[in-house]
Image (tube, rainbow, N blue to C red; front, side, top):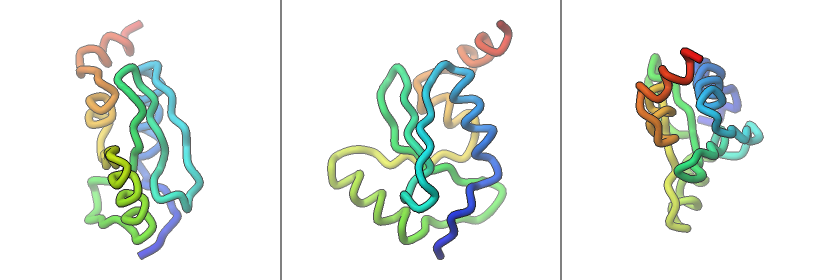
Amino acid sequence: MEHPKPDANKKEIVEVIKIMGCIWIDQDKYAGLDGFLIAPNGIHAVEIKNPAYHWELTDREKRCREEIERLGQKYNIIQTQDEAIALAGFSQSDYMGLTQK
């Protein structure tokens, strides 16, 4: 199933990424992934999925994952803000400290 509509939770996840001081590079809706997270612990290829729904990767996303993994890199699928925080190498307490400033 091909659908270029972003998941409803993407905006909130990207906001958390930016609060942590990381960079989010959004990708074209047909790229096969939502974007790249640039964090102190590296650059991460990211697909965001909504945990409120049963989901599967689209054919385009599957092809993108295969190409990324063929090059020895990881195609990260995240569904929550907590997963974004962890992927960026932060703890929940790190994040809470940033939001208290």
